[in-house]
Image (cartoon, rainbow, N blue to C red; front, top):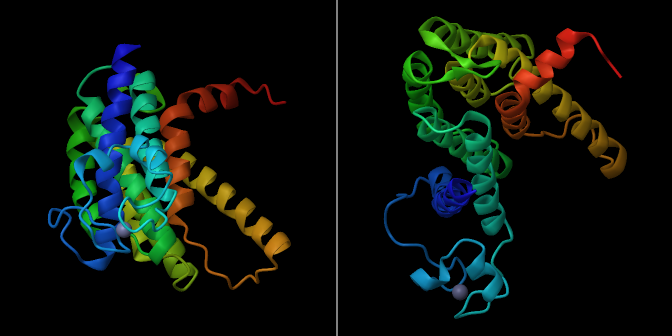
Length: 258
Ligand SMILES: [Zn+2]
C-alpha cells in the first residue's frame, strides 16, 4: 500500500509539471523558467499554493491574489497522471519498467491535452519518445500481452514501423485526414509496446473516436466536417492496451463472448 501512495504522490507532483508543459510547449515558451504565474494577474505562484489538488481545494479554485478562476483542468491533469502511475505499479510491479512507463504515460497525458487545445502533437515529445521507446523496448520493457516476457529489439522496431506505417498509409489514403503528429505518436507507442499492441491500440482508438464522433453529431448537431483531434483517442487505446491488453486478448482467444 505504501508504495502505491508514493507512486500517487510522485505522479501528482509530475502532473503539476505536465500542466506547465501543456501550457508552454505549444506556445514555444521555456518549460524551465520563469516559475509558474497566475495567467490572469501574472503573480508568481507561491510554493504552498502549488501543491497538487490540495491547493486547488483550499483556494476554492481561485487565484489567491486576484480571485480569477483556476481551470479545473489543473487538478484533473495532476490526478490523471497520479492514477496512471499507480496503475503502472499495480500492473507491472517494481523494476526498470517503472520509470520508463511513467515517462511514457506522462508523455501521453501531455499529448492528450495539447492535441485537444491546438490539434497538434509536438515533435518535441514524439521524436525523443521514439528513441527512448526503442531503447526501453529493446532492453527493459515486457510485452504488454505477456507481461512476464521481455519485448525485445525486434518487436520494438517492428512496432515502431507498424505504428508509423499504418498511420502513414491512412494519412495518404485519407488525403490529410490524419496528421503527421498521429503518425509519430503511433510510431512512439509501437516502439514502447510492440506491433500487436499497435493493432489493439488502433482498434480501441478508432472505436472510441467513432463513438464520440457519432454522439457529437447526434447531440450537438456537428457536421461530419467538424475536426476532432484523434490523439486523445489513440492515447486512450494505448492505455487500455497497456493495462488490460493481456486480459482482453486472453478473453478474446478463449472464444467466450457475451
Ligand atoms: Zn491571479
